[in-house]
Image (cartoon, rainbow, N blue to C red; front, side, top):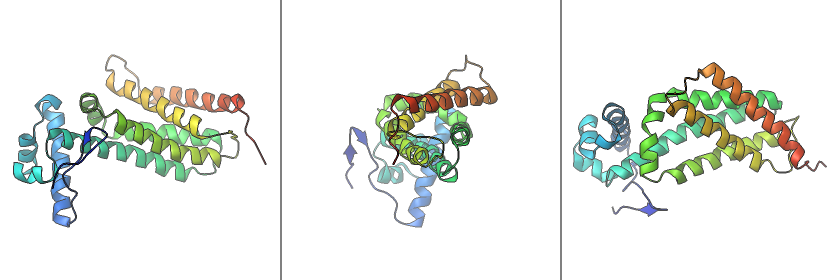
Length: 217
């Protein structure tokens, strides 16, 4: 099957439809992460990944035409884990007051990012190299959509349009988390990061409501 491309990002040749194929692709994903952590992005090759996964290079090429397509899918899966955690948290906090919603979401961001913190650091270079900005943007939009719905149902919040503050909150949290994880020269304990992120986001959301007063029926 020929390689498909969308927005400049190379996609897999095909997706697994059988249990055995799913296991193979899962092994390739995990092997990619192991090679990335052990050898670094510059030394990540399809040959090394196939060897680590215990499959032939030909089998790898059935799903991924090159290492770019492989690393893009690793990034997509990593972002999917983070966004899913945010969406689940939004569902659990539906209808809660603004301070509880903010605290829960900050905790969800921190937990998701630190769950595989070494991978977060390791993906910094390939994200820029493969043009992963659009993947990050799409993930942020999706997370912001879930947050906007939670803000809409928040009993002590009133926005004219929840979409913009939701997106800005996601961008702010993502940027702060990225800096905290990547910048080794910035020794920032998680408890300190949590306190400052919460103060920043909660203060913004409260102030943002005064910028464009909401219309209430």
